[in-house]
Image 1 (tube, rainbow, N blue to C red):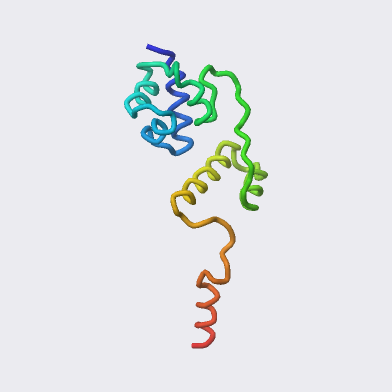
Image 2: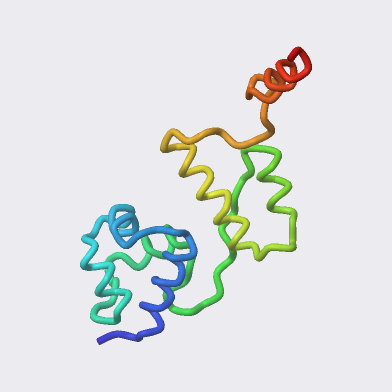
Amino acid sequence: MTDPQVGARIRRARKLLRMTQQELADKVGVSRNTVDAWENGRSYPRRYDVALEEVLGISLDGEPQAPPAIVPEYEWERLLLLDETLPYAERVQIIAITRRSRADGGPAPGPRSAGDGRAARARDSRAG
């Protein structure tokens, strides 16, 4: 058995990042069952503690850890990082999810262009 707080930290961070156990396992290089064992206190991630800390942005030993530095790629990301109405972890999470979606072939974020169909619909409605 291990310290149940370690498993709780792993689970909380994974869920905050909206990551499945399988996604975390793939990033760290273990099986999904291993992640489940860590989260449920059946084993401790001795050989993988550093990798987990890097992937999840947490400290497994409970020591305070500086928030992950994130460099904005778009203006909206810069503005979001400056918005203190949301906790910092949530702001980083929003950016991470958007980047992951974009990497998976989703649309790029940002203001819509005139070619997005709104301008054409407006012209059509005026003409008709």
